[in-house]
Length: 159
Image (cartoon, rainbow, N blue to C red; front, top):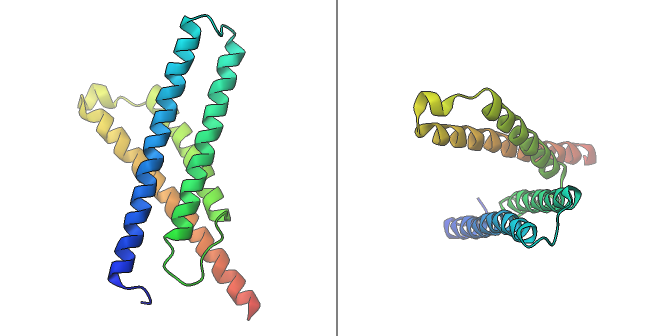
């Protein structure tokens, strides 16, 4: 227990602030891109579908990079041990890819098979959101465990 209680709480608060700012920027980027595309379409500045596809593709790429950097920040700064993970790590890459696959798979399931709104009414959206958050938290834990396993294995190889 090398870190005091106050240091741990301060570290957790910094992580919280960074993640909240990341969420605000991400939501702003999503909404801003949608408004921007609608504005450009309404004023006939773009009318080709490939241009809209390219803008949406770039938006998704930027959001993936922001998500990856957020996970990397949490793994790097949130580690209380003196031996830190590298900022760009296999665990953050794994967690990002797994979260992306979970999100795409979950969206496909909800759009095609989920009947939450028919069964539960307005609570259906909350159930879907909580399930998505649960599965993403498992992905984050698996990524952290991958980092810890790699660090443990590399420590054993040096001995």
